[in-house]
Amino acid sequence: QGYDKLLEGFKKFLDRGWFDPTDPTQTWHPINDAILYLQTDPTMLGGPSLQGLAALIGVPPEKIVLPSMHYGLGGLTDQELNVLYNGADILLRPSKGEGFGLPVLEMMATRGLVAGTDFSSLPELLKGRGFLLENRESTIEICCYPGVDIAHDNFGHYRATVSLEDIAKTLKFAYDAYKGNQARIKAIEKYKEAAYQFALYHTWDKCVDKWA
Image 1 (spheres, rainbow, N blue to C red):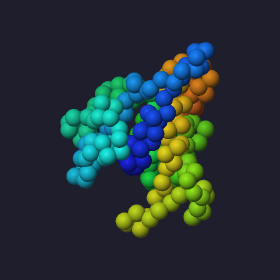
Image 2 (image 1 turned 90 degrees about the horizontal axis):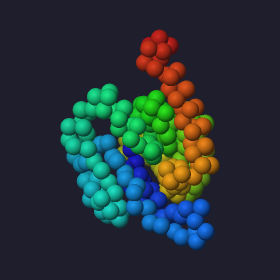
Image 3 (image 1 turned 45 degrees about the vertical axis):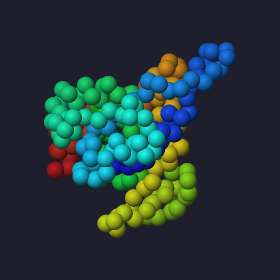
Image 4 (image 1 turned 180 degrees about the vertical axis):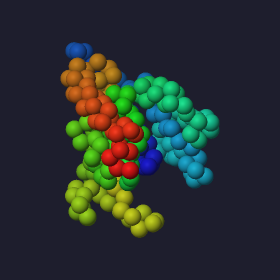
């Protein structure tokens, strides 16, 4: 799911800092109140430690929150899941490839803001309803995904590599809204409402009648 790119992009965002546009001194401040919550197994299902990867990238340990094993292994109730989504300013999905993207739809159903890779199934969910993270490091045309840097994984499938700059810019956009930037808030609210209306149409009952 692109945890390496997620952590690298988050670090790039933290390094940017921010300033209050109403401050006549235009003083830049460090970003001290942003937290990255990772709803996953901290060992990446027996692979490298996420804490170790974050340390290698340079993300301070206090900036990352990982769930307990109970919550990391699917122990969330619907009520707990709703609280978790509503507590987030943005859901970031820098996926290398996505069959559908159920967490994206769940976040939309809470009127939440979502950002995901402009690849695979995510554009169908997010176009006009959230941020699409593009790759601006190179442009390769393979299959039907122009403008996305794509590499083979170990199974021979195509996988996209998301732009770290896009991750950082998108997080900064959401952070500016959190800090009260009215223009950012207005733009994000449009995305949220469009996403919510989309999610209302894609309930289980409606989808199973159409596709099952």
